[in-house]
Length: 123
Image: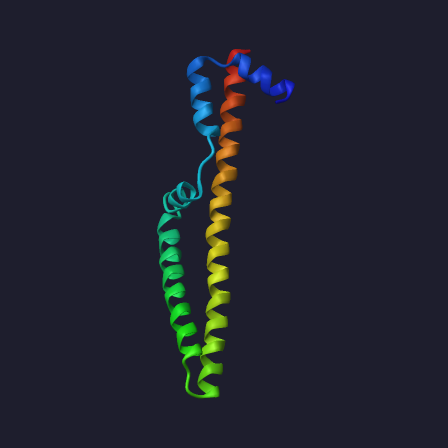
């Protein structure tokens, strides 16, 4: 901790400290995923999550058909579909994780806003 953090902690009341401790608590992956499914873009996040599940199911199906194809052309076609689906899955996951990271940054900014507001009230 820095001197500034110690100064901020010294100026806070017990209720303020409890609130900030709640904001500072580490959140797991599944908690962050659940948080990203809410809010103003929650509907879009749910849609993208459903698309990710469907892409995953199709990817498994394409992999199975690639491995069990009777002809070279069929194996090549399903293999290309598998690679395309894998790339799409990567884009979808990138969007979901970027949203989770954005919410984490917003949470930290909110925590700093609360600390600054509490310090300005003390002075």
